[in-house]
Figure 1 (cartoon, rainbow, N blue to C red):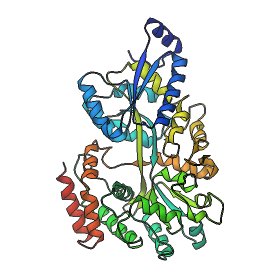
Figure 2: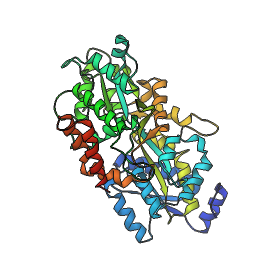
Figure 3: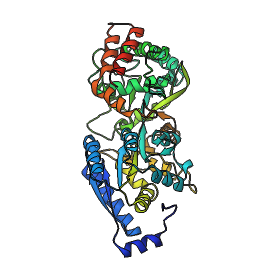
Figure 4: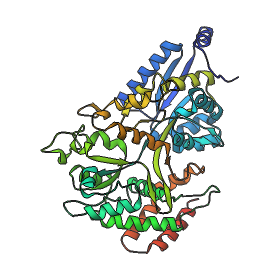
Length: 443
């Protein structure tokens, strides 16, 4: 019988009857992050009597390791993993989705961001309990926008208007588009901006849906952005360098830029701050998590979510208790491993609805210097970053077609076709038709 609320007294009884232990697989394998997880598990054992063995697993090997353990009937009790693994494991019977659903209900469904729950759902149940996530960001020079009387770049038209107004190469580029097809970053940016216009990789029936007017609109929009970018094959490195140097009006980046932008990482200097105070550029940067295109006025964001999966081989009651601990008393410690890229998917508790958002803003980030995010970014910015997870989306995961996305990134057929389009080898309509055929061939 599954637990609805397993009391400490019951846990103590079970422990006396026979020492309980759990196995926790984690892709957070850096030594300092392992140390943090060990401290969390030690506190959990002190509270419950349940010992937890933390096993680091390289993310690229996680799928193979889980498949082998499933075949041997020797899965870990809980596995921390990215959303791109969740639905496939649920379909294969690796995850106990009912156990995850109970944890969410116990903690309070309303305390989780709706978007993270949807991305982790399978056949009406949460397949794994959302743990943390991040939303891809459009960064823009808020000071320059204000001086020019420009609206925030929340949709295609506003982005193009601002890029045209501020484009003054080589002093300032209106945008830095991702144009290097050899880098995953290009497809991440493409997916983000295409989602904004309502473009989905597949529909609910699994049919590829790229040869559409909405995708053509995206391609034409992206071509104009590329024309207001520096020449050459551009990826995340040039985007960050140009923005840090004050030569880019807008870029798209993950939130892992937040500490770098604040001058807390020596390997990513911020020349634009020279002659001013450290953190000046961070304070004059605006962030947009939800973008809209002409075919999708409601807009969308791009989210990456990780979860705690309870497996079918688990000690269910104890595993549920561990996951609940990780998302309550241990949650801020968990997020502290990389606060700039671990946004809370749970904002608080029913009694304290903003507990984790407020606590997260005070967690220190950085490498060569440390400071809380709240030292550089206003409370409204912090709220916007977290709320982006509520509306975050990804191609194909909601439709149960995650493996197709992996093939898309692995083969780079879309990125290469878009690069050819940017180089003038074919028009937008022909490019959309070509990509449609190439993605169909990946099935």
